[in-house]
Length: 525
Image (tube, rainbow, N blue to C red):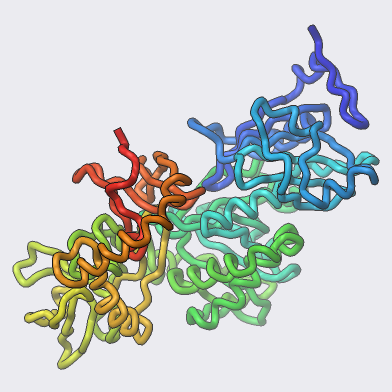
């Protein structure tokens, strides 16, 4: 039997839709979306996306099941729309129970809307105007994309991507700042991936990555560089080797930017893409954190350009000789208890090679033992005569042996635990953190001394409070930062404990270990 969709303003026969596109898998950077059209408007939208965007297929579950349908908002439904109530006309497209209230709706009731809810991966993308809107050549759910990439610690940057020998760089400038003009001179040994928007995010073992977002320049075909692009390769991902702020000038000049100087223009670049301008209010803090992480960990340059001039050889030189790359960052799995609780068994430490002269008291460093057979991570407590004096935060006394320059591996700049990233600060902040951990860390339920007894007493006395926490927890397998599935115990969507398969027990990080007893967590078998 043929089936008709009778939505407000729509009557569309399923037999007609079978000749159209009803489903489309699309990879946008690290995100996998499964798009499903439920009427003629949705099918037309998917056909236009497919014509201009390379929709890479993926295996496994999607991050989002996005249902696309035209759903005009009338005056009677406006109150429910602003309250976040899901219309029954939309809910019926999903073959499972969906939350009825508290939906986050982005857009406005006269154009396009995206509907999402924190308790389901299903989302909706609707055209809400009663009058048909002028259709763009293609369209993407950028409001939803912004939310999802921010959850991964990334952002949408107003800038284009050029790739040289598999290293990506971003050229960014305010509107009218010369991005399209600069990209129109891209030489043949460079790849032009996008000219106005990109996704940027970080992965523990790979550093910062960048992926293009489609823009309309490909439709204009104003230069041979743009004519070469048939479809934007939105699933392509490249290591991000640097960011260049464009500025107009009478002569080419390239000036490195200090992290402190780069944060503000980076925040601007992450905030000024049109979709971000309209939707950034809830994400301001997250976007600023992303800008700060980029400024700290990537080379940032000011690139002053005349109207004519070949600056690409200068960029090639910096990519070949003058930038920090993925190879310069090492990752080590921490083992032991000498730095507990700053670092705990199983933490993945991100270590950046540095010279001894750049270190400060309070920095955490990784270095070789005197025999060269062991890697040690401790905190610098003093520097004398070109030698480092160190101590583990959990140790009562400084280390007996000093660290020489030839033993140094690097400074610890990041710690990954339970799938989450946290920057490791040094200097004055590191000194204060070390002193705090030195004393507070004695409240360790695994210690045999007085601190351990006090910690176990505290945890025992709080079990009445933890009872409700245990009931809310769930056990799930999630892809960890090394892309291997690990078993976690979660409250909501936040991992609270990880299962150590080698030891066959749960690992609860401090200070959660003062509340949660690993022996009371579920059996994973």
